[in-house]
Length: 292
Image 1 (cartoon, rainbow, N blue to C red):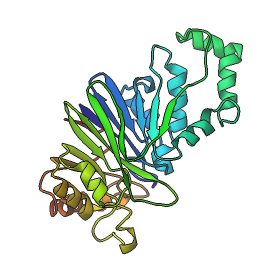
Image 2: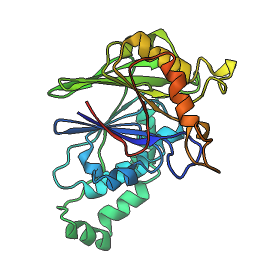
Image 3: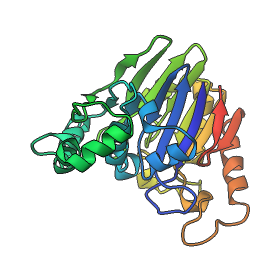
Image 4: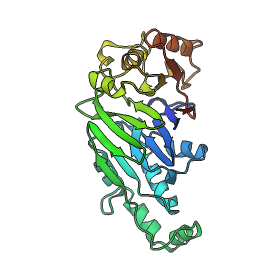
């Protein structure tokens, strides 16, 4: 099983990391967790065609986790005619509505685009020249709003999820756990520390955890909504995991935005996490690949 970090950042615009997205290969199956800015482009940079992704899981609907969904969905449809299975999409309440608002044949934001590509002779010829067979049909997505508990399963893997705290009541948030014969990974999404997340992560091989703040940056009113260096490390320790991968960084933790990160900041972050957790700690970077 291989984990690839496609997006390790936040909504803060950065030339080195921006938004959240994580790809996992389990046998012949490829899964994507969140679909933040430029995810499709980043997949292609690594030679992963959108049509190769069979499953997409949203943790919540902040734009830094969802904004490339239209591009990913439509490019997968537009180039996925070589036997690609129907895309299966899961997420908290609002996932079905989001999808409908994008591709519904009557009211979807991209309905005119889709109709033009299906019907205009130039588009049809282009589609055929790329290997597409007629008649061309609109994109069809198997989408489902889900809550805590089992989500879906393949031949040798399964997904479960737990509700987390972040920005309720405006958005619901989920964390996901992938279990397979090759190992287990937990994706916290944007979440604060809580018993449900700890239970989901218990005994996992790898936890990909939000690490939004250093100890000095953590505000009292954000402790319940966001994991930081101390709370992420404590989660990993209490859950008994083997590896902690830190993502969703602010620029103070190491991403370039308007300027260079502070010298030594990454080392200080690792040291703060290590004060709580003594297993393997990885400061996640975009395009980093980890084997389980």
